[in-house]
Amino acid sequence: MRNGKRSITTAVKIWLVEQAAGRGVLVAGLALKHGVDANQLHRWMKLQHLRGNSPVPALLPVTFCEPPARRAVMPSCVPSTIEIERAVAIVRIPP
Image (cartoon, rainbow, N blue to C red; front, side, top):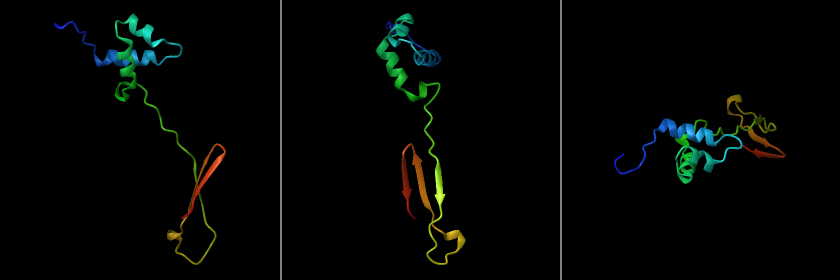
């Protein structure tokens, strides 16, 4: 560009971010090798839309348990307890 700044395409940014995410890669070294400021590369890494693989949210197992019978209720209206088990903790949400 006329003002001395380089124009880097989105494809190159994505590629650099993917390379920087590799195991044992030094971000500063990668940036220097490709003529990019290390701080700029860190900023690109923070942007979700530039990441090739977005972090996947963890899915927790959910079990529905029937409560003890209190009175006659229509089967479609029987409230259920929600139970979430994670590592050593169990969270029960009563109806």
